[in-house]
Length: 309
Image (cartoon, rainbow, N blue to C red; front, side):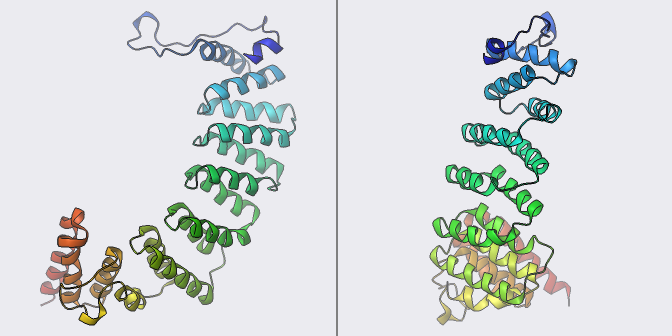
C-alpha cells in the first residue's frame, strides 16, 4: 500500500470499522488492505487532516473502491486546501475513469474540478474516449450535458450525435443527447431546424423501421415543436400497405411503431374505426406482449365516443 510506504503514520491511531462488535449478525468481510486503509482514513478524516499523506491515502482507497463517494468528497477538500495542480488531477481521473468506466462518483468529482478550473479544453476528447469504451454509458452522457451547458458548447453536439447515430442507429443515448442539443438551450429552434430533424429521423427510421429510439425521438420532436402528429400520417403509411387505405387487417406492416403513431393520429382525428383497427393489429399480431394495453386503449376510445351521445 503506497500510502504506508511513502509516509510515516506513527502519530495516527487507526479507527476500526464498528459493525456492532460481537453482536454483529453479518459483519462485512473486507479485504485486509482495504480494511486497514479505511481505518487510517477514518482517523485523518476525524481530525480533518489535509496533507500529502491523506491525499495519497484517498488515492489508494479509491483504487480499491471507486464507488466510495465520501472518499471522493474528502479528496476534493484536500486538493483545494493544498492548492494542488488540478490539471494533474484530471490526468489521474482519466486513468481511474478508464479503469472503472461505470462509476458515477468519478464524474461528479471531475465536474467539481473542471468547474473550479473554468476550462473545458480536455473534456470532449476524454468523453469521446470513454464513449468508445461504452457508447451508452449514462454517466458519461450526463456529464457531457453538464459540460455543454456550463461552457456553452452547443455547436459541437448535433454533428457529434449524427456521427454516433450513423455508427449505431439504435443508440438511444445518442438520440437522447441529440434531443437535448436541439431543445436544451434557451433559444427555441427555428422551423428549418425542426424540419431538418424530422427528415433526418425519417431517414434513420427507414434504415431500421422497428427502432424505438428513433420513433421516440420523432414523436418527441413533433410534440416539443408543437407540430401535429397528423403530419406524419403519410410517412407512417409508407411502412404499411397504403393501397388498402388502412381499412382492413390485410396490411403488410413493417413497423409496429408506425402503427402506434397511426393509432394516435386517428384517435386525435376522432376516426375511431381506423384507430381501433390499428390497436387491434397491435394487440393481436404486432405487439402481443402489450395486448391488454392496446385493448384498453381501444375500449377507452370507444367508451369516450359512446359517452358523447
